[in-house]
Image (cartoon, rainbow, N blue to C red; front, side):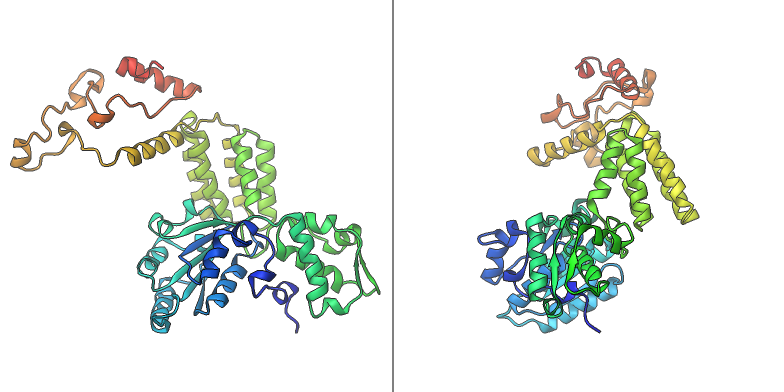
Length: 424
């Protein structure tokens, strides 16, 4: 039985690799490293079908180094450790580190990712991770800090047309057939920038046509597919454009748009728990203090989904989606933590004021630890003015309440307590 077209055409070298010129084109950063024969660990982030796995295999071939593959869906910590041991025994001093390629690395648990740290840090393996999810959310910080991040883009129209031409002229099976591509709009539109989908569509149309010549038109493509090819791949990969549209519809307070994109994900076979996690994130990032109940409902949605399963879980997702989309919006907490992190990075480890320090020993008390601290509950309204920031930042303002009814009340309360500090 012949391999699928997408496998038969999988590039073996960078010269045959289509797309991602910003990374592997002449003079691009990743191309330079590959040509130099030395690469550092990195993560490839991009939508399905843009060449993440292929690029990792090409690199391993080019560097002539052992290549190990793990799938985050089916591998555990034990598998990771076994591969690392194999990598140790297969490495020669003059050779580049063995490459460990982990597909869908965003699905690795924290313990699985932790088990990689030592091997990546000491160079036992060079890690190449592939993910369709934002690594800053899904990959633990210590591992992310040890890897470069390269973003792969959906293939452009010119890339897809080049791929079609390549398939018709280079594939051992297709080049023997008399194929005329009269129209390409439908194939390009339905592929969504996904090379694998495009080749699957081409193969489906060709295999279902007994005419000679085989003339490919937009109508024929639509007729042959007989399904919504804009849906997700059924292997559970995430189409980042649709989840992006979903979250942006919630953020933009459009319940119709949000419920439509939810339906697209449900119909496409998306992992329901992934949608629920995104709702929890949105509840904090986009609604936040404007409606704190949104986070409670999003968490309740997640818990309920785990209890009742599918397909009834779609109703719970719909309820939470509409609630979040129709809630007032605020990102003041999101901005506050990012502002505080930036402040910490710029000012370093400033000392904790003495009055805020614990004094569990006699020596610490003698040194002034905890002295002059005022216990808020000993004062009227359970509040007393005192300094809680380091001395260098004592006048710094970090959280800025926004103009919604909930935060207006919070701001008024803060003004009553702190006066001028919240009079902006």
